[in-house]
Image (cartoon, rainbow, N blue to C red; front, side):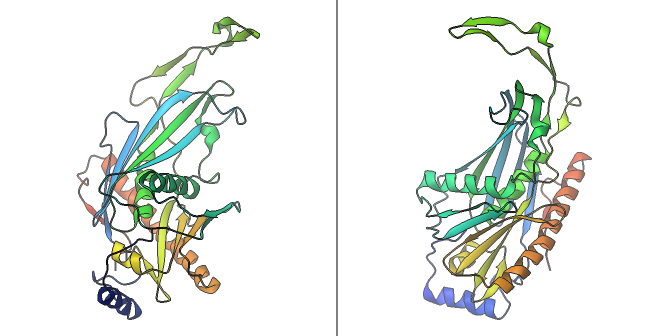
Length: 324
């Protein structure tokens, strides 16, 4: 995200001169990503959890699955909600004006962001929901247990412990890995003969049937998170595109583009922030490169989670994505 920074004019000029020459103050090239540390299954009281860290950015994600009623307008679908909380040490990162986002479906939104602590959290939660949970990425019908009666309510809670650049990218990685760590319990619903009738003011109304949950760890089914995208953010600094920016580099960016990319390299959603315009020709190249980077991110993440599933010690392994 764009941020207000206390960089002095000399520090800003140093960063901008480096970008013009293709160098960054941490030694990376303009296209290089910083290494990530990924952990899963760290919160035993949740249905799935993960933690993602990268050079000061620290994100914790917990998934809780509960049984509830499906939406009245979509009786054969489940519900997924995203909530973001920022720790007291994370200050809101300035004001974004002219921000807009669009999914593959053409949905567009914009406006001025509430920059209070609660507004910042709500903004990030809504943006993550828009970018990472478009209809093409998650089949919510797979979350329905019994149409009109029962469906899974999946609550994704993300805690931003510290921010040092690349917040959306890290949160999307944490969300995907936590959902991939989530198992939906096996449930059996009673027959209609077991429904009990109760008298109401409007007449006789049928109550919900009983259901049984198989609590065996091997009885559930994995959450359908294969197509959940990850975010790839690119900043425009002095007419150059910089990937995975630090907080100092974000303060020098005139604009940023965040692209949500699925495992097949499709760009399923795009969000642009900042007041500067993006050249259409350059944007096409950004989308192409973002697709390649996003696929590599997901491949590395899936390989790490597969290792975790075999019991190999990779909890504290540093995973370098798109490193030179």
